[in-house]
Image (cartoon, rainbow, N blue to C red; front, side, top):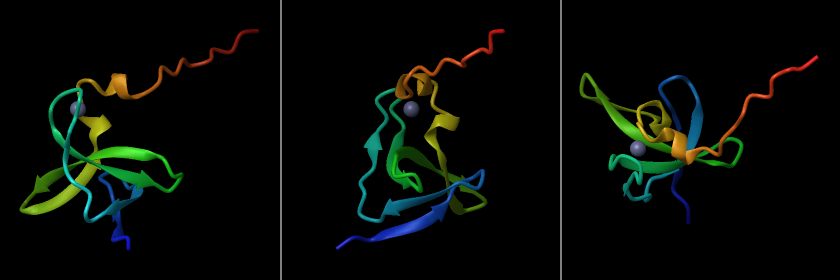
Length: 81
Ligand SMILES: [Zn+2]
């Protein structure tokens, strides 16, 4: 039985989160985050943000000082003529 619900992140991205998902500690910065699933079936660390007493969620990449360590190094392929 899954208790997935769709939430919209700050910025507008839609993700699915399991309501039973525990908070885990970001290995980069120690923040408490949860993993949500994106519409493309990949996992995205998200964190709660309190705005005027309402909890919103945003991608942890937005604030994590160690975000670069999560992502595989993606080099922009420069166009060479
Ligand atoms: Zn972090």
